[in-house]
Length: 266
Image (cartoon, rainbow, N blue to C red):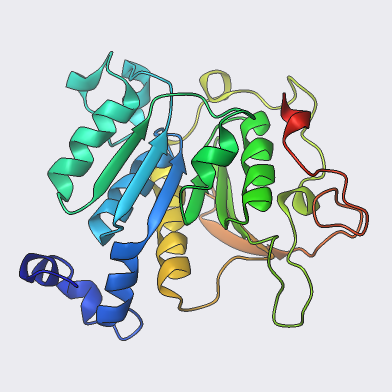
């Protein structure tokens, strides 16, 4: 049940027909794990906390640096040198004390991924490297958890939702992350953010869209991004959507699955 304070706090949600009291209660009961408290994770955490998600977890082993502050808006100048999970915890508590915040100051690995991911209803991946993205996607499939994953370029970004452990309305298994991206690009072909740069406000756009997609998944309204890749071109301010389907050759839920655990990530 929502308290009087919560009813007032979330009033603008509750008057929405698509949300209402039941939807807001669903948000309160939900648990979400965010991978990374950086450019994408920062707006995700703030908007999910503001929305009233009951339990928010974040995994990040990094500390706040001055160069982060151009886009990682959950951190401030006084947080430089602090662990990002601690900085995020302070901001989330100040924003909404009704949210239970769980900090995981570690790196996601094949050894801890299943335990961490299995403890939450929904996973949002804002990591900045392909190794982690594939690990998260495989672990979410094995743990039967939905995944919202996004990526940033210099002036472009993408977003999709993965429910590969479930079937669609036609009784066909949903596509996996590996159906969309069968293999990671060769090392060195995609420059890191520190080398290539990134438009700070673009991280806010994609992170906010991740939060919106998470709210939609939890409350259950509209058409989600399962089987659809949303692409953003910030230079032209253009949004496009690419549909993709399950690849029968994919190693997770394909016709002859080859990945049954995370041993390949060790």
